[in-house]
Every structure is written in C-alpha cells, then in structure tokens.
Image (tube, rainbow, N blue to C red):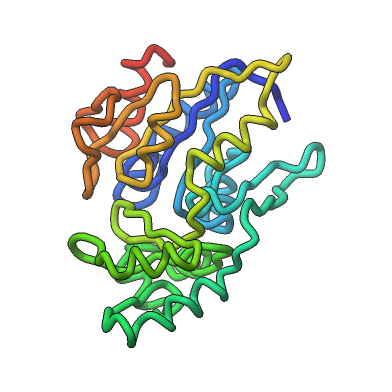
Length: 256
C-alpha cells in the first residue's frame, strides 16, 4: 500500500454522498487528490459489499473502514479487488441472536436489517434492490430503526454482553463495544505509516458515530445531517451537506 503524508477519512451518507447515494462532482476531486498522493478513505457504517460496489461504479480504488470499524477493506496489490480484514471476533449471527433475545424481556421493537425484506430496506433507505442486498450482507453490526433517546435498559444489557449502540444519521447500530470508526482508522493507519511516522489525518462526518473519528484527526470538518453533532465537537462546520459541502470543507481546510 502506498505510503502518504496526508490521509482523508470520510463518512459517506450525508458527507461524501448526495441524497441519492451518488458522488457527483466529488469523484473527479477524489482522483485529483489521489494523483497528489492523498488517499480518500471511507470510514462508514456501510458494509464492505456496499463500499466495494460504490468504488467500482466510480472507478475508484483504495482501502476503507466499514461497519463502524468492524472490518477493513484492503486493496490487493497487483491483483485488483479487495481483501477483508476483520477487527472483531463478533459475528453478525451472534449479534442478531442477542438482539432477538432482548425483545421480549425489554418489550422493545428491536427490528433491524436482518428482520426486513429487501423491499422494506429499499423504502427505509432509498437504496436500490442490489444495494439493499449489499447493505444486508453484514459481518458484525446491526442497524436498528429507532426514534428518540436510547433506552437505558437496552444500553445496560448490551454493555453486559460486550456490545454498544452507536447513533448514525438514520439508524441506531448495535455492534461490538470495543470498536468504532476511530479504532478502524487507527488500525488502517498502521498500514499507511511512512518511515515510522503517522500521516496527517483529516476527517469528515456528520453524525454522532463520527465523533471519535473527528476527535482523533489533526483537522476535522462536520457537515449538516439528520442528527447534527453538538457544538462542543471542535471542527470546521461546512454550510452544505453531501459532495458540495465535502469539497467546500476540504477547500477551507486547505487540502484542495
């Protein structure tokens, strides 16, 4: 993998992607950064299958942090495609079984991607059937449909089992407690170290599950989204969401 001095970690939905899940004008900008030796690395709650589909569609290549840090997608040198590096021993089936076991005792509507038909996932996310299938191909996280504050009883039971619930832009994701986007990014940075030095890290996001990633970065930008980050998070605030705000933020950070 190419060593570099600057790395950009970015959330996807409401950050790099527009409302329809497209990169729009950001794709040539990513290629421009890549030509300068600055990789753009997704750090997302999306699955490996989703990210690899997006990258192929836009003729892009590079690593990614997926499922909020549950795994890395690493390009295969000289062979094309990616290999998956899991960062947790937890399995999707085990997380699903634990969630199902909490429904009755907590009397909570704990429904997620594993419960829904492709039609329902398409309706709730706006994804195409092919992309919805990729979104349901999960390794170690389960997005739940949830409104309002997280139930304290759920938080406690998940904690007892070694799991946590992270709030994203649209879903509450149940996942291993010891991982997140910042953890996945730190593991990936070990692959990108040059001469023993860490590269400068720039991070962009819009939701609470991006917070620790933004806090670990040297420079960070928050974009407007459905669940804005609180003012206490120190970062540049972009005026627009999606690709336009993403390019705006990097320009204002002096990366363009």
